[in-house]
Length: 189
Image (tube, rainbow, N blue to C red; front, side):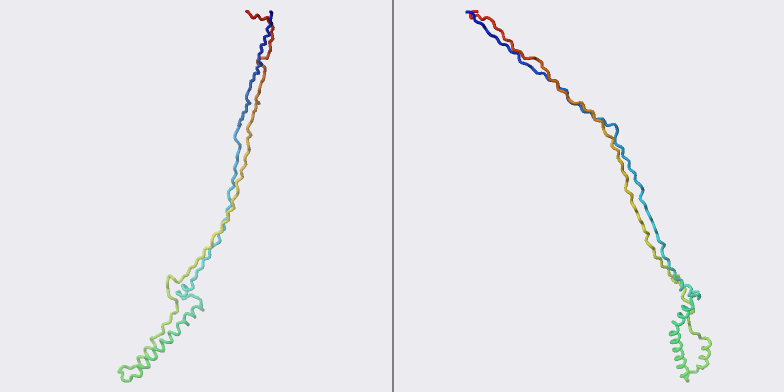
């Protein structure tokens, strides 16, 4: 008997892939430009003059060249003391004249002393280095400071971007196939 043999051979298909990655390049040509301008601060100073006060009236009185009113006041202020000294002297003289038993001539001595004694009145002020009074009042300076803000400018230098996209190639590396053959088959062979 003659038998037929059916043979089927199959070749599978194969897909091939090739990929190229994407590329990205960044170039910085130059750094950014920055400028800073700082104007100096404005300063204003105002210093008022101080006040100097000099009182030399006592020094002029010590030289007997003071004002007329001050001179009269100085003499007038001594009158109470001069009066009391004169009164005490008169009382003493009266007591001497009352002592008749005293061998000295009290009347003649008192008359002689009256011509020589003069009351002690100060017509000039006392001389001293403290006669001139100085008073100085300082005024504080007025300071006005006005600060100026800095001016900052920045110019950006943009980088250059280059982008190459990736690529995928798909192709048939091996085609699929089916091979069918019919041949005689011998059982005994």
